[in-house]
Length: 151
Image (cartoon, rainbow, N blue to C red; front, side, top):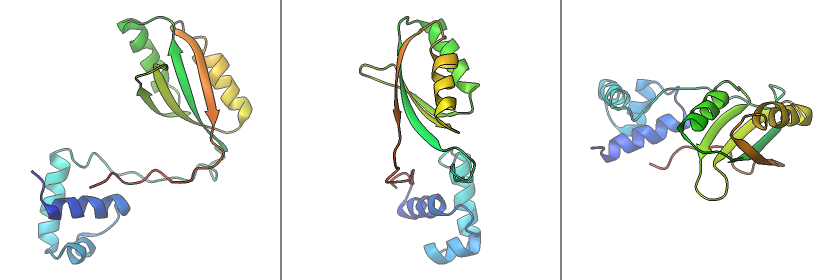
């Protein structure tokens, strides 16, 4: 069971995972050792799954962000498994969801340019035996960055 202090700790860490125990203790009105114990408990209990750096895709030459809806023509455990394995091998696919509605999957992708996106679609996704069609959308501008989860 999480208390208000745990939620405040999680919110602070989502904004800046580099905060030291001393900085967190000042924000939460706890001693650094209490903050450290809470943080360790939240990590051990799986509330905190890891720490990552947020990179700027444009500075890395990833100029095209897109969403691709994938429609399967054939459904079944083996097709789903092989499609999931395909997605795991492609660095351009940064996240993937199974969906309700018309599309079976929604993929978020980052590519260097439009020819790279075209190759991903026509040389990787469409040749998969279970895929019947894809629908892609190119992001023109991202109005809100991926934010922290509500706590």
